[in-house]
Structure formats: structure tokens, C-alpha cells
Amino acid sequence: MNCSEVQELLSAYYGGELDDAQTYAISAYVEMCEVCKAELDSLRCSRRILNLSAVPYLPSRFKIKSRNEWMSRMSSKGQGQASIVDLDDANLQLN
Image 1 (cartoon, helix red, strand yellow):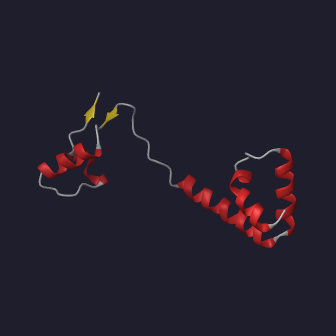
Image 2 (cartoon, helix red, strand yellow):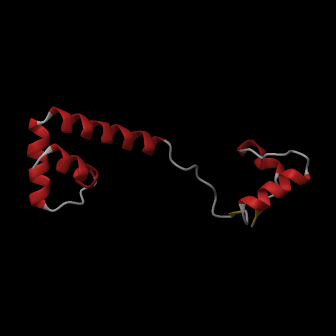
Image 3 (cartoon, one colour):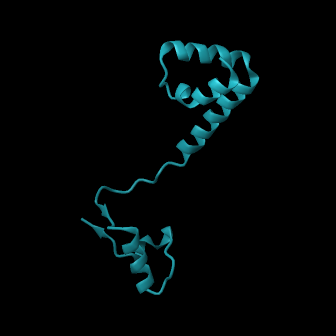
């Protein structure tokens, strides 16, 4: 195995998607290669950041037909471009 092969498989390795032989080979290689170890650490950090920026929860009753409908509602109120803070002004349906 070399750095190129390992780095190509790091995401699958981190996600637990590889078979036992591949997992063992990559684990051993990462232990001896500082470049690949740094790449794996970077992947871990990126995943942590993505997990922290999760999609906000909306109640199951929340309905909006489309982004176009949303923009149309905001434009008809003379507000131009809508933003997330305009949710209260959108007259959205809650069933």
C-alpha cells in the first residue's frame, strides 16, 4: 500500500465501510505514515464540524410548498429577498 491508495480509501475507512483486511492494512499504514495520519485527523475534524452544523429541527406539521412560493410571498410583501428571520411573516401553514 502507498499514500495515494490509503488516502483514496480514508473516508470509507473512517466510515467503517471496508472489509477487515483493508481496515487492518490502512490502520497499520496510518500508524507509520505521518502524512496519512494527518489526513485522517483532518477528515475526523471535518466530520465533527459537519456534525455540529446539523440541519435545524422543524416540526412535522411544518409545510411550505417550495422555495419559489416562499420567495413569492416575501416579494408580494415588498420585502425582496427573504431570509430565515422572515419565518414569522410568511403565513406558513401549520396543520
